[in-house]
Image 1 (cartoon, rainbow, N blue to C red):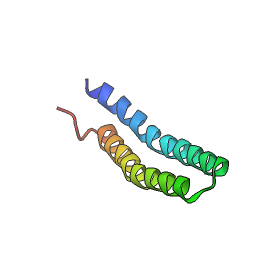
Image 2: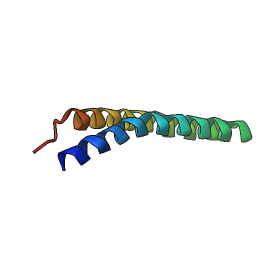
Image 3: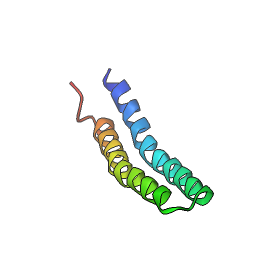
Image 4: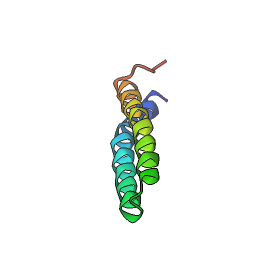
Length: 71
């Protein structure tokens, strides 16, 4: 089980930056389609809230990979 936790930790570490990349890419595309202030504010809030969550994914994955959650 501990080995599975470590493998999943690596997956969490990879998932964080990939999710940020696709979120910013999608936000930029949506803003380019409809460049009004409402769209900019909406995507700014989405990105601003999700980036700390994705950083948390990476931190959680790092600790899992290092074995901090081993029983």
